[in-house]
Image 1 (cartoon, rainbow, N blue to C red):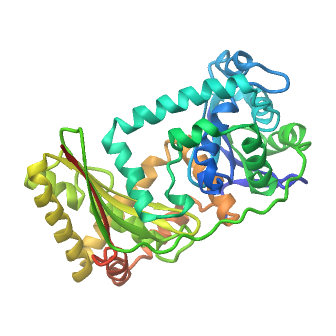
Image 2 (image 1 turned 45 degrees about the vertical axis):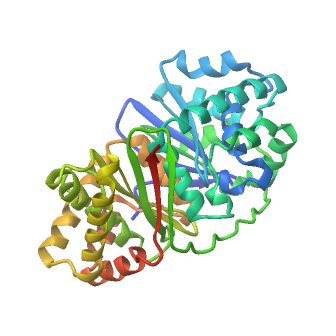
Image 3 (image 1 turned 30 degrees about the vertical axis):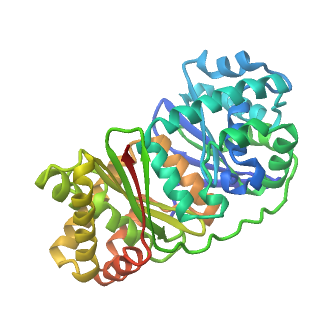
Length: 409
């Protein structure tokens, strides 16, 4: 049984609604188009478009767009990933129509004027420069470019100074026509309404959006091969990422890897890597692991930053923990405790209602359904120690791992 409702408009746009007895509404509009859909010369285009959506429409200027929700105390924002573009807002319940009206205007009536393109080009070039000054951020993108070599998935979402400098109106039009398929769009609302009202307002504003049935051609990235890479930079600490391509969002072992990631270096101070490397040896202030599931692949990585002379020991300790997971099956009590911890963290995370409704909207895009919290818990509880051993030997295989080090000059 689902705890949400869905309505599909004639043009293919889906409306997802989840009830919440609150005076605050969280809503988002997600388009299944991101940086992996850019052509080779368009790196950074999806992010460029996201910036420009807030600049000018056929009936509003920049000031009117920004003030439309801020004037009633609402919060409006957006972001771009490798696979999605998302606009989201948090607002008092009485301002839902105002929000839907603005969403429809900026998503489907933006004019992308040349002068605004030049302004945002400068803003993004500054953003890239700022980003490159933060090695803990920059190393992640460099790592992904190694993991997905010669594939759009490996490109920096921000683009490069060279590609951003050349983006133009023709690129914008081509990208939106090719990728903004109306059947791959979801408008999601988490609030206190009658579902009929949400549908009626959605039909009023999104119902007239022309159908776009263009199908994108996404290529699956080739499997990465083992590599070890060291770069010297003007930094004070060593930064390191170790990782591998991982399971897609539809893979049968996705939940097992999510559980393993949480055990190894996920949230909280009691993860294996934190206890072994930070607490026991005092080597690294920050050490964490991450797993991102994408539609046809995934990214697993372990990151740490430490003094240069401690980096080799930290790396050896990480591989020691990975070896344990490849060779030793978790005991019944260990497995139960880690499931309880992970389930508790997921339950607490649901309190962030914006994150929840965005997650549900993405799930509807990818799978045409969204799991209830209980269904998520059931899938985690179904993971076995044997499966975790199998996953560890596949994902934590030393012969496939990519390592990237940024060392001080």
